[in-house]
Length: 306
Image (cartoon, rainbow, N blue to C red; front, side):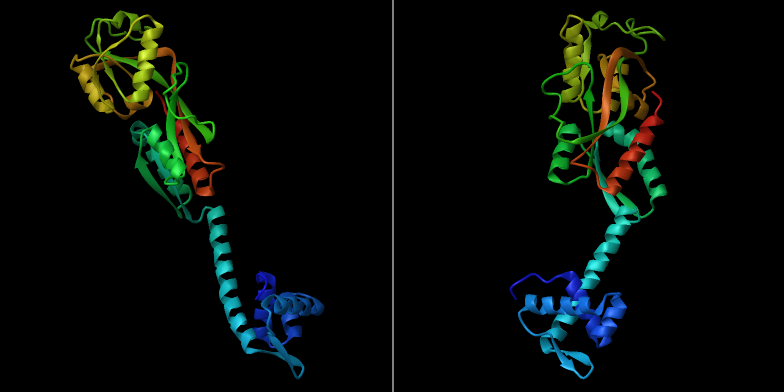
């Protein structure tokens, strides 16, 4: 065999094998008879061996023709199966979306998004994994997930906040406020409607979170003239709030962490202009299941009240 086998020509051969004649095959396929004859001649040339022989008013397949016709039915069946699967995927009747998200998003945005997706498209399934943004980006790059839910601080930029995200497709889910968090009975605790004064806490112990959140905290304190004395570090926002409530220090926490869990012993106030943008990233345009998941994340973000 000197050439690749064309699917249309294989379809013609399979029709001839089923019907027993070129005329009947042409009628079944809605082709002109000369077109069927042309496809068969080209297929024989591609195969490099005779596939048909004249027999009365019809044709008879050679041994090679029968072998290829049987394989053609298998090939065409597989192609049709793949087409049905792709149609189902495009129509969101089947498929899977894999998501990596940071903890406070998993506790707030993701449950509603997943519930909405499954309700709207029962044939879809979702895979979830918890990752901080750098690990989520790595999982996205490696193909381990389809969507990475990440965040970036908006108005205080620093070189090590996260990888460059410009190479990804990005959809903003929401922008959450960054809050000063103090013990409720602390003298410097901001009252309702009062703008928090970070400078008033320059002698306090501070509790830092992940590397990006710590860098943001340091930058915000530096902007008002002091370096925070970091006494504790933990990525666990429940632990941060418990430490603050116990009087171990003060901290900055974004809105989703307070929506996910709020200790009764803390006081909070948003810092003016301090926001954290939550984004869904994909490598190139998302596949239909991932795109549907992102739509649900946007809807969940629109319903958040902080």
